[in-house]
Image 1: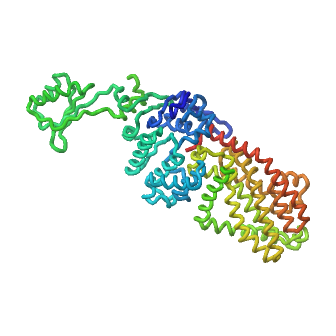
Image 2: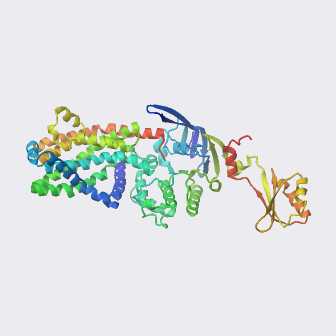
Length: 335
Length: 269
């Protein structure tokens, strides 16, 4: 494999073997297959979301790419370096952010923690101090007073910002972020999201991003890899994935009045129509279900207007990434 | 060497913050050798008499046991630091970031005990030097300074075997506080700080001499008792250094084995 991709995972397999004690002397070996041949690629400058339900294999994948876990078989490369044979080289080109709520020394300040890890990452002297100050400003910790406050006094948002700053200490071309906004308040989550997007767009960093927040993934990621029970079940940009699910979509109409017979008229032209009662502002809500709403919306409006009813609001509900997630990860494949 | 210095700086930052921000730790560090010496003396006075001790060992129990407590405190901290750190890193969640850093595990673990031993120099000034000065005047001050210097060598030569045993055990059975509690007293007995090493049986003496700091303990004890010429003290010192150098290889192997074990199991997040 060459190094034109920032991340390349090829047929990764990982089994966890655990021993469960039964009684005093006996134990039973249990094997959990976390990854059953995961393959994907990430380009430089691309933000790729790795999605899947709990236990799908996301964190195992991130761990293998971060050189924190050896795969049983398969290969993975980061910036062209093999994660098993060239682990030290991989470690120089990755920044990781896993588990937002811990991962620093409580009795050190935000600045001291970054200096500590800076030493570990091979930085020193003025270069280290400059980098630490720059990152504290970049993630907004300086303005929050987190630079010289003890880590044990940090809020979750401050901890997440510091974790992102550490991931950027070496200015790595690849970022591996495991649920970076989990449990954060809105300003901190927004800051993290906008920073990640900036880093990919302006500096061409490749980002592998896991999250359970579908809206966030849709906002941040260029491409999504869906993983379930250790295999990749779907891959593509969010719009492409949405178009792949055979869903019934909805046209929601808010009408000035609902004369008798209007719903029947709509049904007569072959539409599935549901009355939804009145909205808080007194308008009548009607929903029309269709596979391709764009093709029937003109007919719907024509029938309604012919009865002298005004359409105050019309909205075609699109399938969300959440629908895609549910479809691909709950056995919806092929159904 | 540059990497080792970076690690030492990092560890200084961590340990000094811990010690100076928690004044109770600083106070206990200073008080501990006094407490330990008082305890051993009380035990000794209950079971025997200072005259018997003087006749058998050749010096007053106060100076002998004070030296023992000081060396114990400064050298056993190496085992504590080395074996405590993986447990602490795992609990603090820092282990994944440490392991995924482009650095050598051996270098890091070699650097971990250094800050604590620099603190033991302070302890020498607050404990050993005043005690010896009061008991023996200027001569005592010189003896105390030699003991402090020897304890520095003891600490440094203890690092390879502490890392080899500590991380070796962890790679076999996982990180645990229980392992520390088993290993620490074994090292304590093997070092022989609380009894004159030259009074041991030959076999036990030779076996424990394989532990580098045990040889430094003997030097310190001989200095306190004023037993033997200066030249005679150089042999155990050289032996300690040579043994420590030979133990660098198992130290490296243990560190690598521990890291590979962690990577096979997966570093806990």
